[in-house]
Length: 123
Image 1 (tube, rainbow, N blue to C red):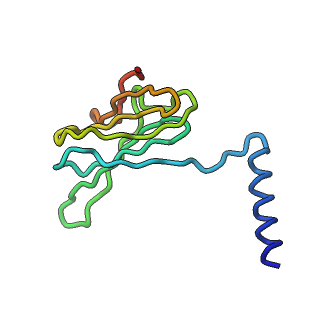
Image 2: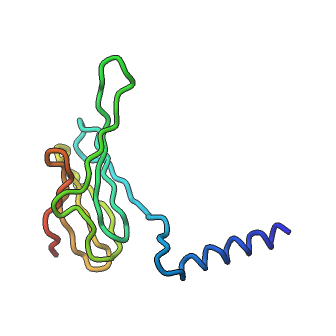
């Protein structure tokens, strides 16, 4: 009985892949900023390259708050690919690099104001 249930679940998941207009869950990669005195974590959606970031902030008399920065200029969805994040070894670098693993293109991404921005992709 359990085998039939797993088969049915697998068949249902396979059917979702082939139904037009059905979005599957996105996959993200997370990476902390290399800056040693910054508690910021970047994320990239692995197939679209969209980059965001969050960090913790102290709020007096409370447990604090998580501040998240939405994608701004250059950090939104890119051409479909296989994206990842890479940090430099520079201890004072507040940003990270978004890399496209199939083409070798990369761009520097960092927080500017209340958004994440990325330079144009280059190789």
